[in-house]
Each structure stands twice: as C-alpha cells, then as structure tokens.
Image (cartoon, rainbow, N blue to C red; front, side, top):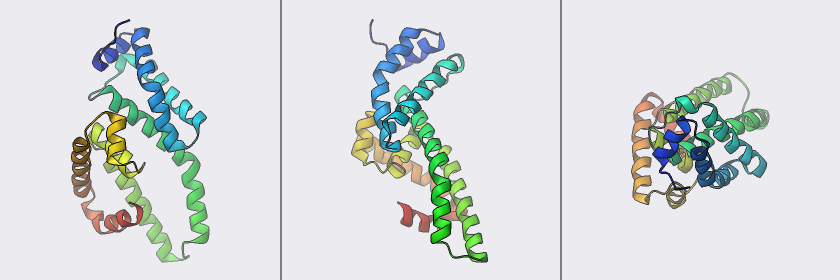
Length: 192
C-alpha cells in the first residue's frame, strides 16, 4: 500500500476507506498515546483517550472537517479529551482541598472565588477561540509546560514557528482579556 498524504488520508476517511483510517492510525497512534500519557500520567487512560479520538473520527467521518494539518487536529483533539478527563477527576478535589485549607472565609473570599472562576472561564473561552494550530501550541507550552523544542519535535515544526504562534496567541489573549488584564497578569505570574 502506498503512503497517502494527510489530505489524502482525510479524504479517504470521509469516503469510508478503512485503509486510509488504518494509515492514520499507524502513523499517529503511538505518538498520540505518548502525548496523552505525558498529560494523564497513566498509560491505560492515555490509550483510552486516543482510541476515543480515533473512534470519534471514524463515526463522524462523513462530516469530518480538518482545516489545518491532520497532525495538529489529532493533537488538539487528544489534548482536549485529556483536559476534560483531568478536569472531571481533579478540579473538584483540588478546589475542595484548597477551600478547606487555604482560602480565608468570608465575603472577600467568596468574591475572589467568583472572580477567579469567571477569569478561568474567560481564559478557557479565549484560548479555545485561538486558531487551531495556535491553540494546540499555546496549550502545549502553557498548560503542558513543554519547551519550544519539545513542541517543535512533537508537531514537526520549526522553533521559529512555535515562537511566532506563542506570540500570536499572547497578542490575541491580551485583546480578548483586556477587561480582566490586571487580574490576568497576577494569575499569569502565579501560574506560568
């Protein structure tokens, strides 16, 4: 079987050709499992996340829309699935522990919590509106704490491209979050 290009793979999957799907699977599965494993710290869950992404692609193959590269699309999909898993299992417990042990009680802490929650939602909304490749790179840098070289290696891009995409993401986020900027700056200092 000859190797198809990524656009040919996508077209083949849309047409229901199992050989195109199989080539995508063989090309990207292990790398995506490694990436998901770096996020989830659990090999079984990493495999489950990647299988879920591939299953979703096959089930929705007729309406499959990939505007940039197949690789970026797959990494973004796995990233988002992993984030959802992490949120479901971690956020509530972490927040509960933080509330019990670290937050002062009273009106101010409730107000701070509301503002913090609003900011978190605004940041996530703003990041999710970034262009596809820009979003993947920004999440890998800021949320996964990968170095530019690591991102470049995983996505097959140059470091200069990574730097440009991070700069673009930060410019867009500054505009999107302008009304939250003072609080956002404090958050960036604390978390990044």
